[in-house]
Image 1 (spheres, helix red, strand yellow):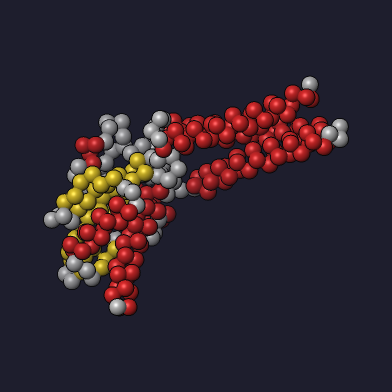
Image 2: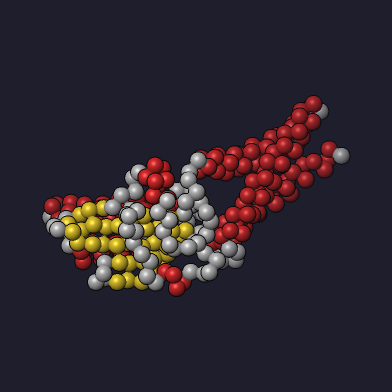
Length: 251
């Protein structure tokens, strides 16, 4: 029966690899929904763990029989399957302690209100009414989510924000230059979950204040994606002007 172990492990490894590939690639090309892709990936991790156990038992078997060729092959399967499952489990455990919120904003008192986004969302998607009870959790877990203040003109900041959204590959769904509001849809890196973003630019005395909000369309927990998107975007926006200033100073 031992002669069937290697082929079984080989085809099982291919099966797990296909599941992993389809779970991500299928979402990116639009064949399946992100939630389905996430489910496929989770099952592939469980399958990899089972495969690791079988490979470990096979290593012990072939080691006792001194079959070096099959021993190396089973060892390779064990390393690959265990590494794959460990990476995803570690990623999950790292995010496990984050709060179950899916709507992040730099202004928890008067958050930017979506204008056009409600018309493109499905009835099954998350509600866009901001839950003020989440403000305390946000301040505790994501203290870096703060508005950006710049001594620049409103028009220049608005244009830079729109350009940055395009650079990041976000789909801009509406622009209101006079009101200083732009809405866009961003997608998460791996599974392509759609999150809706709004940037609000207001003039206050001799500077402009940039507020931002990012809300997931599905799921009760965003695993920190929205907070990271906001802090990264505002930091990149700030650096855009710093880079322009350095270029101007150089010449």
